[in-house]
Image (cartoon, rainbow, N blue to C red; front, side, top):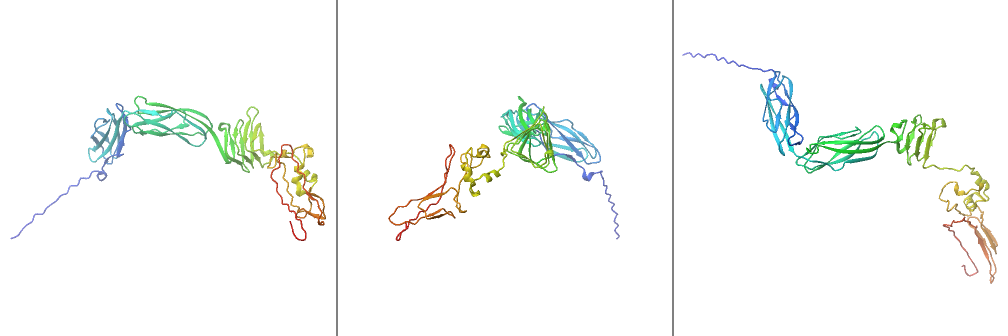
Amino acid sequence: MKTYRKPLLICLLILTLPGLGLAQISFTVDTLAFPPTTIDSTSTFEVTLTNTLTVAQDVTFNGIGAPFYISDNPITVPGEGSASTTLSFTPTSVSTFPLELIAAGSVFGSDTISLEAEGTLPGAELILDTLDFGTKSVNSIATMYLPIASTGIGTLFIDSITSSNPVFYAEGGISIPQGDTTQVAINFYSEFSGVYEVDLTVYSSDPFNPTLNLHCSVTAISAVSGEVCGTWSLINSPYQLIDNIVVPEGCTLSVEAGVLIQGGEYDIEVHGSFISNGTSESPVTISLGEFISHSPSENVVLNYTDLTEANEFEFIDRDYRDFKELNPLSNDDLAYWLDTLSMIDYINSKHLYNLYPNENSPNHIGKYSEDFSDNTPQGWTHSGSVNSWHANGEYYVYYQGNSNNYYNTQIISPVFRANAGELFENGYGRFRCSVRDKTSVN
């Protein structure tokens, strides 16, 4: 018996949709947090959907409900394109409101976004209503902090902070939990010096007091140090030295008319050129430690310039060789001679201590010391019974007498004279006296 098998024909129908392997309807973000929103007010966000199919899809939103609302449902998203719609949140009570929003495509694909929102009835309070920045340098950012308290129910939201002058600025978008106080950064930056008085306005979610006012003030100066070239302009005056200034060789520092330079104890040292362009109507004013120039006079010009040096050191114009030539004593005893000069003795009838302040003036003009190293006693004398003496390393006096007799030998020091009101301070020396006979030394 023969068996016959019928051939089995299997047909597989494959439907291919363009872009199906990557087909997706998707939100551009996974989560969306609304700012804390006051009861009976509305916050909105724009959400965007993308479609990777080559054909358009109608996208339907599921799960939406009060207090959330959507402006377009469904929404058409073009093939390989995107479309946006607006989500809004309008709370009617103080509470938190989570929501999972689903977007489903009419052809293929879906996606979910998590929504977070809070209904509040907040209050806002500025702990300070003025900020004084004091003195700050131009071209640098200075920051102070403004305390803002959340005094109502729920989270307070600081939406924005505006300024009447952009030199002061601050960022908004700040949430402050109920009962907390947050330090909000207020910043200052300017390229120009001057005194700034600026008003700022804080916009918050407080329904009863949505705007709060803040006043800020600052004095902006030009703080300078180190090597400097170029021009110091009137618009950036005053210039405050925060360390010594050096104008290098081959470099010029020009100062415009009317500029004020405040140096304190710091110096300006010029190796290049320094040109102060003051005028009779608008002079340049400079106060500093010292103005030191190493440059020829044509490179240092001070036109109508009021220069005050706090560390100025003044020398009397005189020939100091006179001290040596008029010294009646040897050169190693110059200090002693200077100390014994009277007002009349001194050259040109001037007090010695007027030359310059030093540790020996004016209460003690000079110091005296003598080590007899040159065999010249310089003011030391002796009298009485003396056989021999010398002043070589010490002042030595010797006398040999007979027993049972009295002898008187004296060593006399120089006379030290003091001016009225002066007192002798420290003095020291070594003295030794020996008397000998055949049996003892005392």
